[in-house]
Image 1 (cartoon, rainbow, N blue to C red):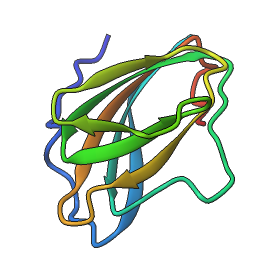
Image 2: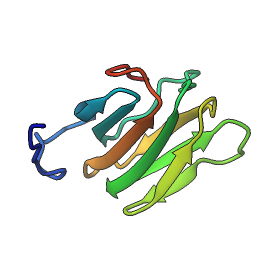
Image 3: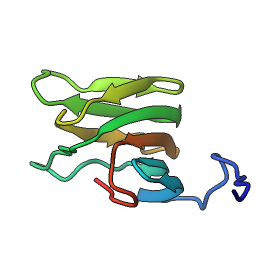
Length: 115
């Protein structure tokens, strides 16, 4: 097995938008870093995955709306959340001033498949 190394907080500066990087991909498992700034899920769109996703907010802030809930959950540095398969969700907003850094662990996802 090859050793993997890196730093979650070293990435190109974003003016706005989002970048995704696979950190580790194995059968049934994908770990990715998401860096976003002032980004949101397009209006009317939802993520609805057939696998579980565990997310951890490393830096910044975000509003994550779960289908059926009235208000977005305000996520801050250190907050994590398990989104079970079939849990419709969307990113309502991410911090427009600094990058928001997430780690997403996709459990049971086909290798390399994204949302």
